Image (cartoon, rainbow over all chains, first blue to last red; front, top):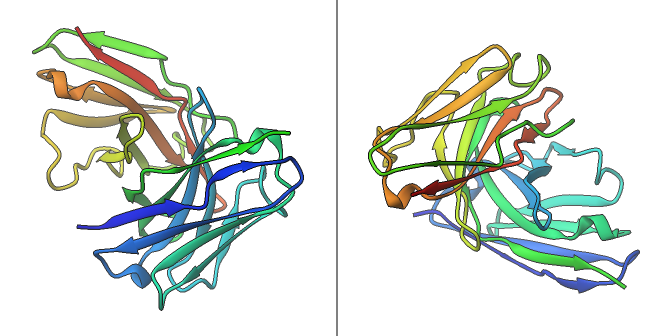
Length: 121
Length: 110
């Protein structure tokens, strides 16, 4: 059974940085693209970023482009999200999700339980 | 991209059928047969219920079905059961390697 466990959330001041991690187990991590999806309080889900199975391609939502960096270490089955210049509107539960399919067609077949990031002064 | 539009809430009695709509545009829902649906209970991991518009993953009840017409996708749950309660989100590929989700629908089984 695939398991994804996020960590690294917490309370941070606007303008500061935070790094989230997602530890994967139970499947061939390196065979799948991985995404970050977030959910602000009382809101729906919002796609954040994608990294291809080998880390060669990265894509971002306009709302985080230039501030967030997605990366992965296939030797350790770890997915990361480096979040810089955080804004109050980045406050959300952040989920990592495994993607099955190619970079443009597919679906999120496994998700973690999320880690809460609160940006507040 | 703007979020896909879903009703905030739907409800039904056990045994009944309900349908949750998901309305997008010709740039997302209307342009791709890449709609997926997720069930989410707060504090838990979202669960894939439907992919590629109408396909069910292994282990998902055949009471769940998906369809699409134009810019609107739909999730139908037949024979409602108490365990179906939760929040449901649609998702569509939106081109240029981006995805867009719906605002979510809270399903209540009366």
